[in-house]
Image (cartoon, rainbow, N blue to C red; front, side):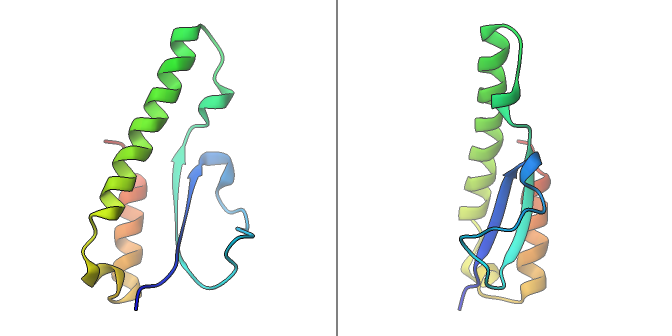
Length: 90
């Protein structure tokens, strides 16, 4: 049986309660800068959105490639993998 997983992606969302899932769950935080807060030229703003997208895309792919044995195995192993994925940039 796989457990629920909650992944926050923006730095300002770390530690917030997730109202959509109050059940016990594996949790990790991605800590990506919110590109919507970027100021500067149009190119700088576009670059911030592209960087956030690249990081999130890579992390989603890493999560989706976890083997079933990790997803349904010991909670500590899944948590370690979630933490590892949340720290990767690409």
